Image (tube, rainbow, N blue to C red; front, top):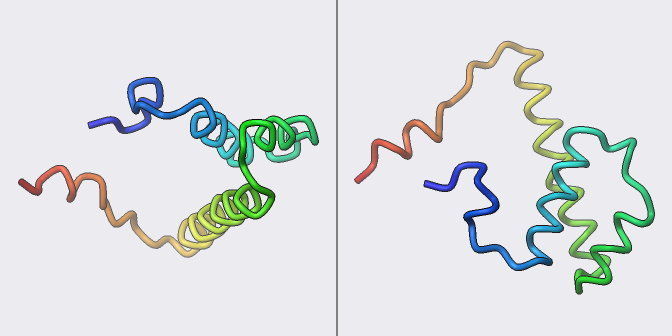
Length: 85
């Protein structure tokens, strides 16, 4: 299983750059710069693809914060998936 092991995931340089960018957006979006976005463009990502990655990342952050705020317990999807053959 590759959980979080991006170096072992066989990603292209463009895919890895996008993963690094969404990590930045997740952890410190206020540190994102125009140069970060330009790097993605230079690697072949279209404007709508970059925007979609940002929207999806933001939506997951939003849903997680709402769930945490209301005390909704984790659904443990990863653990459940490990138990499937």
